Structure formats: structure tokens, C-alpha cells
Image (cartoon, rainbow, N blue to C red; front, side, top):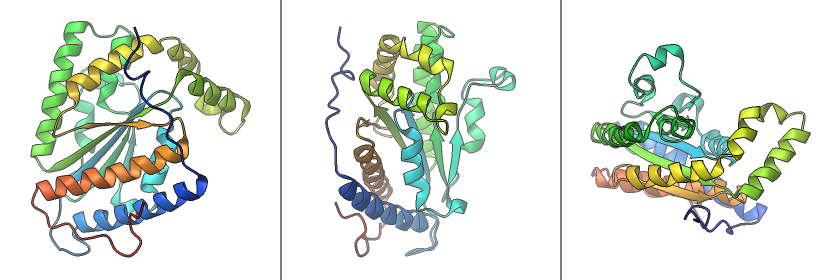
Length: 260
């Protein structure tokens, strides 16, 4: 049976010149929105917090997308949180416990490199939780995201999709590059063999947790230049939409900001 994600259109691509132009324009707009929500320009009113989380197969380009997202921002205005396996202390608590501290307050911003969705992906595929627990966990995630959204946080979620063939090519490139080989682990190779199981878990994850208050945006990441521009532009659109939904008077783009 073919997964709809395996059938997802991965053909979009753009030139280096177009990518650079679109990324720069979106970065400028992001800086403007970030300063606006921090109450530093166009308003002295603090806006909602912002959560941006990234999920995707190994080597899908999450790191590069995050670097482009944060590259134009003042480091004081964004927090990047890499998520790894839970510690012994984490395992003593509810699985969402370890994320509470890093959820941004009003006027703040957090970017997650992987997230609480490891519960429905890695833990489920590795057999660490059963089907009933996965169902309950999905419901708890929906309520968790609803709670932080209702509490004044914009939630934007990205899944970066690449093909099995492209992932193998990137793995091989990493393996032969001494400055990138550290990124490749035996677990990465082992996870490749479980792609069908991950696709099945992913379908369930997206179906059950794609909500109006926390929508999933699937990004075709076969072409990194296209993916990086698409992530930034999608984030701008989602952010503006949520600010307007909350009755903020969002300032217009200035000059060459956000010109596609």
C-alpha cells in the first residue's frame, strides 16, 4: 500500500538566485514581525508567543531550514531547542513534562528541532508505546497545543518530506564528508530500514493532530533551496494569519520585504 506521503509531490525546485531573493525577503519580514510582537516597533503592545517546530526524516534539512529562519533574527529574540531522547528524569514524568519550561511566554519565540511528536514517531515505531497509548498521547498533544494556543502562543508545525532515494544520497554524502560525518549515526541507518513503519506512524500523527489551532504544513524538501524559502514564507503567512485572528493590527511589509 502506497502512503500519501510517499506520493507527495517532491518536484518543486527553484534556482539559487530565486532562493536567495525569496529567503532574504522573508527573513526581513520575519525580523519585522518578531520586533512587532516583542513590542519594539510599530507598537508597544506585547504580542503572542511563537512556537515553530520541525519534524522530518533524518537528513531532510531541518537544520538548514532552522539556520535560515533564525539567521536574520537577533539571538536575544529567539530560542532554539534541540530535542533528543528523554532522560531518566524525563521518563519519571508525563511525556510532555520536559517541554513545559521552553514554551515561550508572550512576546517570545521558541524553535524546536524535533519535538513532542517523537512520542508518536520514534517511540511508537520502536515499540516503546502500544497503540492504545499512542491514541491517548495524540489526544493529549492536541489538548496541549490547544492549551498553549489559547494561552497566547502561535503554533506552527513543519514536516519536511524527502524521498527514500534522496535520503540515501544525502547519507552517502555525509558519510564521505569529514565535516558532516558526525551527523550520521548507526541509528540513522537503522531507521532507514523502518521507513514503511515511520510512514504509517506519520500518517496517523498528521491525521490526528492536524488542527485549526496547530496546523501541519508539509514541505517538499527534495530541493533544499525550495524548502528553505517555502518554510520561511509559510511561517510568515501563518504568523500574520494568527495575529490577525487575535485582532492585532499587523504592520504592512516595508520596502522589499517578502516579495516573491
